[in-house]
Image 1 (cartoon, helix red, strand yellow):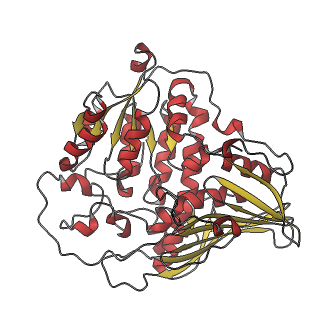
Image 2 (cartoon, rainbow, N blue to C red; image 1 turned 120 degrees about the vertical axis):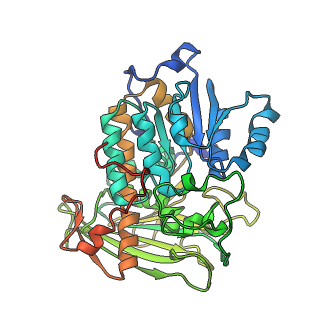
Length: 458
């Protein structure tokens, strides 16, 4: 049977079509694509690693053209353009190293932001203010304050804004959420996110002169001024607090989003996180093993009237957690969220049983005997959803997804603050502040290096 059309054992098939449905209204801020057979002109900002996946994904869509690339490392351009444009007989894109110049290009309808985390919100807000539609990679913000400002901008300006939590587009996730909302597991009280990815040491490297062709001041952007170091540059920036958020904010934010969605919560009352950077004496300053627990109010629940979300990041040898991961093929394709070496996904517990979920499949086990129950599967095209929304969508409806993205990123940031302070924290979801804790509240934002400042008023 085709996995995308799989029915459950009990005939369950309730994909949440409304989650990805878009309205019929069009708006007046961006219409250049309408005169070219509905062609949407896209710019990809950040072309190392995942940026090239974005290029390929847009090129595969009908009436979509990648017309511009932007990256602070101009050394990347020759190979990327040859591989993804020249060799495919596609027009060469315009190239920029300064995002502010790209914003002035009226030919560009939409941007896809694939920069390091510390640039995500600022690049998105600038793009929104310039009248561009925006898809911003996960996590949509580097800290809590940025996420709030990004959500405000998405509500103020009449453009489409898509969050990078692409599992939201999958029928697998939508049907799992609907099954739980319909009471399939009874009272859902505990949700777990698993991020067990094999990560080796990054070693130690000395500071170096800035490589020719690298616009390092632009790369730093909002972050503090520091000497260039290859271990704080391409990819390994993930493991430095100035630019990344550790693996909970890298791979883990996908599973955090699902864990929160399936639990049906937004912001917590209490946070406790502990872990460390184990085994390796290297340049990484984020934890490679981290355990976080969040407590949420649950007035409708039994007992203590609360729900718990538990998240764990592991970097080395680990177990599989559930039969859903036991059969991993050692020769399976390895890539984005898929690898035989990793256990990445979610577990959800309710009064009637539990659910195990990967990126493309979920299963349930019911009753004391854990008998197989309803299941579901299916993947979709997150990039196509973005383009569909640009052509036919209502920003007021579609842009609710970026607020959901913020809530999930917020949990990552709150956990990291708890870990870095070495103590449990009480949080007020209504005030969006820690309770009587100036030290923790100061970590909800950062000092921005001018002129790369996330504005307080968007």
